[in-house]
Length: 136
Image (cartoon, rainbow, N blue to C red; front, side):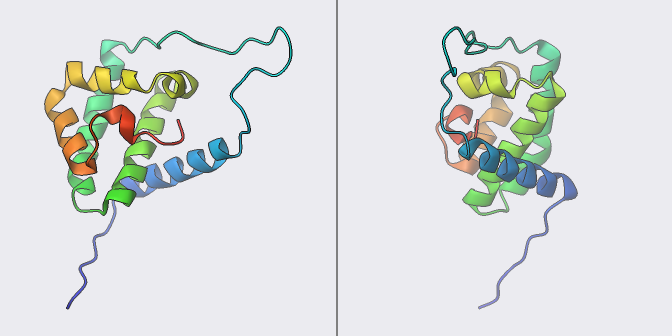
């Protein structure tokens, strides 16, 4: 029995490390509730994802979905999270907004690149992109 090794691209490794770091940082939080009276809980409305940002998300997902197909599901999901974090940071650091409304990532992909969305959900074995987001 031979074991086949798959090398990861630099972008995939960076995305995986980013996702793992974000998961680690976010898992340290004890609450998402505002602390103290009168504290603003932050954005509660769904973030607006413009056409350019949605197209960039689609391009980033399209570039990596082939690599995820060659990885085990756990690593592929971590890399997927890294890509989404990277995309969110490139577009005004909307990570907090995405964390509260994960479905906007799925909605943007469904509207702008349904083929890519379908590939990603198939490869990651998830019903929608929001279900694959951890640490958001």
